[in-house]
Length: 94
View: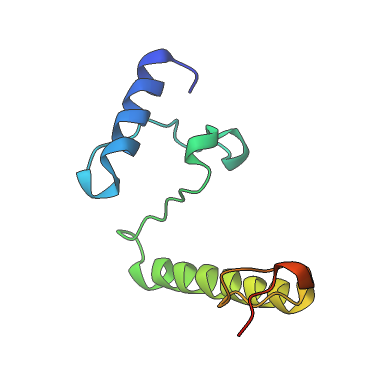
């Protein structure tokens, strides 16, 4: 993963965006903790073997992320629909 060519190809593919259909070389079965920092937000789910299970994983993951986001928003007292969060001095006047 630390190979210069692998790093170059990865940055090129990331610069072109996900719709470029370029391959990003990673080792198969590489633990997520060992992904390069730039790739840690990517996940791979194989939909060819069991599409229903794959889509269920995606749904549950997004749902859990949104639940955590709203839980953290409520916990911090910060409204994500506002562009500014923080102390009274930083709140917008309506």
